[in-house]
Figure 1 (cartoon, one colour):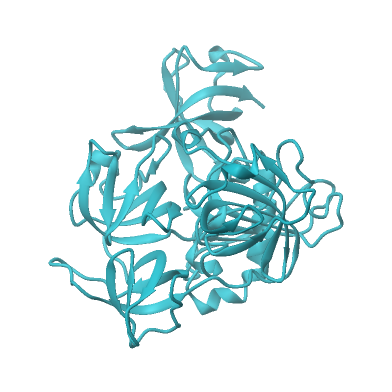
Figure 2 (spheres, one colour):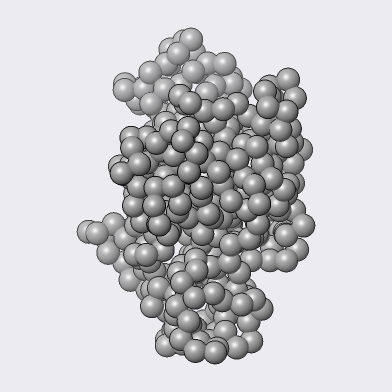
Length: 436
């Protein structure tokens, strides 16, 4: 959720409140199993434009309802990973948000309508729910890391960009629209320019990725991490040496911040030039329902810590800890729910999320079947939600309200399944197909 995911540009700051609202609604609406994805910088480690995990919403024992449904609140904010389409679903929280009338842009304000992908980090701002329905006002997309691939470790399921280690999971989505299409980690090559979305562990300088996209060229590189000041105009971020003498923004020592860098071609520089620096910002107006899924970046105690730089106050005796407060540590991925007041998240529930859940994260898609290869098992079809997705089904797929013989082009279905790499990018292996 970031989350958060995660916002360096002034033009987007005016949309911050909208993003906050939408994000909460997204989390509430979205979700399929695995506890969700998210927790980057869109909501907590930068401005709304730089995207990242984190999210707001409901779903599960002890959860409160969507702001406006029962609380008469101020709308909702959801920051985190896209885990479904057919309306947008964020962070696996089981809530579908109607984004048909929302503005959908990247962190620079460029139109992204029709280009949202599973695993992308977004900030979704929604209006107050009406008759139980939540309507998105805006969706802002942005990853945490962008630069050239410097190392690839197939055995270790990782690669490195700007000195930051990127961990690849079974649920990581490799963009089929990349040219050529990314067919998994093996499809990457040294010096490829990629944008990476996911969960940052600032202390380890590691990013657990949810989405990878190859790009032909970019106007800038970017990285998020913990700052170490090394002089009046020098800093290090994850070991990367940076000169910020001409950058917009001021770095803060030991803070989790986002930095834009001038792009470079090999051989890469030993010292980079920063063009923009931005850190944690107030997410706008207060929210009576806010949820973020991210890693703990700073830890004082179980009642006072930060997720991606966002302060969390869990001092209220009524706070529910799952499984317990002792499980909270720096680097642990958590889902925090509560209210946002004055830039601090006052928690009502804190749940530790296992990284093992991300390996088999379940995505959820709603839409009409097209391109059906036949009703024989195994088979495949295309599903058009906010984006076209290839669906695979076999003897292990559970059919609800029908069987494989009922599949037909144009028929609306709900698909839940896991990501798997194919020759043309990531496809979804259906665990269940429900006729709607």
